[in-house]
Every structure is written in structure tokens, then in C-alpha cells.
Image 1 (cartoon, rainbow, N blue to C red):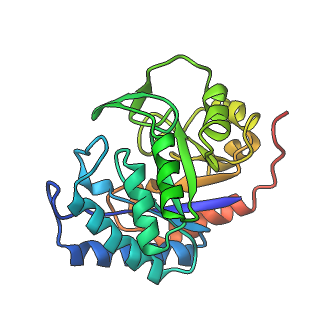
Image 2: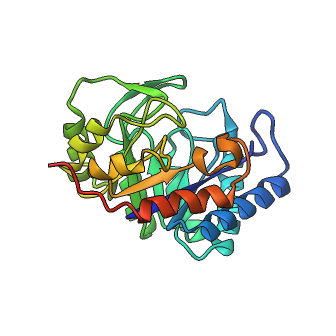
Length: 259
């Protein structure tokens, strides 16, 4: 069972509402340290504050700032660190891993086209793996399916998309989310996915009250951002007491999986 805590970076230089890189780094180090103190198994760094997001191919300044922030997080914590370059620049995320020693990435549109407020995101599994191979890095890929803040442009069953992400897209894990940040997925959807792939992470809306439901549905891990923040507000700093509460709840859940 893996619990991944999210470091939501403030707006990076080059984006609207930008903060100084020193402020970004200070916040990233502090939040990452609190997540580790609270007991998470890994930390995922993403440029959450950069809205409105580029659909892909983010500017060089974004890659540079992400590299600086991720490197600082890698130096701060002893748990694995991941990278998500929003909205869907998985190639840049691989490059940041290569430069910093981060060990996994998250990709929002991996094996399906998705209509979003950034336009249509095209699947990029082929690009991600060619970049991994070109650089010779050891990076795991966590792939969203039916990603939040988007609508798929095909009507394939969710379990078919999940199987394609792993078998054809070579993803190491599949992420199931709700419709928006902080919104939980439907347990039945988690159940369908868990029947066809081995590693299924719930990527939004997890709380101490509902974690056991997703475990029963077959989830093998969680990616948690909003709940870990002070007062459960995404933009707030990490609250280590909330981290400990949820991690403890997940670890103690002795639930049986649904048939």
C-alpha cells in the first residue's frame, strides 16, 4: 500500500501570479518535509500554481524552475520523489527526473485523448517512453485514466483504457480520479480497473472516512494533495497532523476486497 503526498508548487516564474524562485523552493522543501514526517511513502511535485496551464510543451523557464524545486525536494526527503508537469508535458517530467534523480512521473493524458480547458490533450505514451529510453533513466510512469478536469473523447470502458495503459502504454501504475481536484472517484470505477491491472492508485478526494471504501474496491495506493493541507484547502501549506491522521487510517484499514 503506497501513499503519495503532493507538493503543490506556488506559481513559478514565467507564469501569471508568479512568486520568486526562493519562495517556491522554501515552500516546496517545507511541504515535502511535513509529508515525510507524516508518514507518506513518496512525494509528487507538480506546478499546480501555474494555471492557466499550457496543454503540453511547457516553456523552458517552467522546466528550469521545476528542476530547481524538484532537486531541492530530493535533497530534503529520503522517500522517492515524482514529477508532474502540468498539464501534460510528460517528456519534460522525464527530463526533470534525469536532472534531479527523481524516480517517477505522473501523466494526465497517456493513452486516450481528453477534452479539457486547455483544449484537446493528445496521448503521449509513445513520447514518454522514447525519452526514457533516449536518456537511459530508470523512471516509473503513473498514468491517469479518465483524468479529472477533462472528458475522454472515446467511449471505451474504463477497464479497457486501464489495460491499454499498462499493456500497450507500458505504465507502471494507473490512477483513477474524480471529476475535479479534491473530488473522489466512484468506487465501482476503481473496482473495474483493479480487476485488470495490479497497481491502482486513487488520485483525488481521499479522506479518512472513505479510504477503506477504495481499499475494498481494490486500490493499492493513494495520491493525496488537498486533504493533507491546512483546513483541507488545496492552496494552503501541508498540515502534518492531517497527514498522520490519513496515513494512520489507511494503514489500519483491515478491510476485505470486494469480490
